[in-house]
Each structure stands twice: as structure tokens, then as C-alpha cells.
Image 1 (cartoon, rainbow, N blue to C red):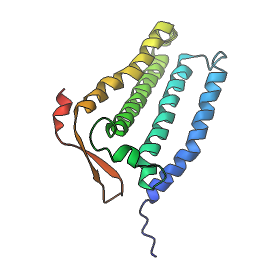
Image 2: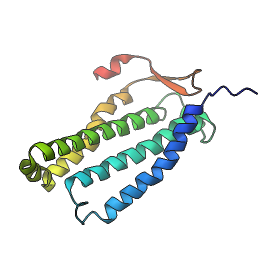
Image 3: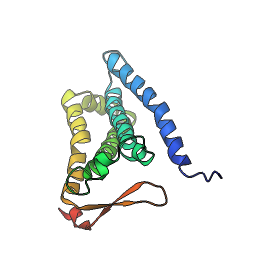
Image 4: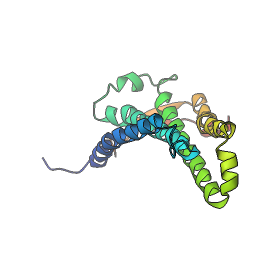
Length: 179
């Protein structure tokens, strides 16, 4: 048997996730345990905590729903045999939701750092106010819902991707973006 390298990138990515997830969870535990101590009680680390949650859930979700079924490590028929209805949309909605939550978390973190370096006094007045932090975190977790909601109105066809051995979700109509 000749090794062709197929799936190597997937195995490397799964391995990296297996290494990074415990580190992420350890970082999250540290942030939660010491959140009342300086400097971990700052708005930056509070935003980091929420970004770490989004990262960890995305890592788990994408591996459990996409990568593991490709290699027979997870019963794919739970999600893929029912080609109509809401169940096949769960993987797409989940990955899109958590990737957008990550993106909004990164943008919020970048705004936090930008204001800290350019307007330190305004930064402290704005970011250290609990109501402003609550709004920023609500936006991080609620805006992705508005982005992924149209997927529930779309019909998808599940097809096999011969190049990767994975599954492709092909929208039967692109009109769902106009909902």
C-alpha cells in the first residue's frame, strides 16, 4: 500500500485540536478562578474569557460534527441520514454561529485594545462600565443568531466531497440570503 497523504491535514488538525483544547480549557479555568484579582479582573480578560468559550465550543463542534464522522469515529447517520428537516442544518448553523461569535469576539477584543492604546482615559470610562461590557458581550453572542437564522429557511442537499471524503452542504437556492 502506497501512502498518498490523503487525510493527513485532517489528522494533523484533529491532533492540534486535541492539544489546544485542554490548554484553552485550562486558560478558561484560570480566568474564571482568578477573575477577581488584578490584572485578570480587567475588561480585556473578561472578553478573553468569552472568546475562549467560543473557541472551545467551535473546536469541539466542528470536530464532532464534521471531522469525526468522516473517519467513522462518530455515528454520522444521526445527522446525515435525515436529509430534510432541521437536523441536517444543525452542523451548518452551529459552525456558522460559533465562527461568527469568534469573529465578533475578536473584533470586540481589538476595539478594547485600540481604545486602551489611543484613548486610555476614555477606555477606562467605557470598558470598565458593567453595562457597556454586557452590551458588548450580548452583541458577541446575539448578532450571530441574526446571521445564521436564514439557514433555517433554506433547503440543503448533502453530497459527498470526493476530494476530501467529507460532506458538502449545497444550498438548493441562494434566495435564503434574502430572507
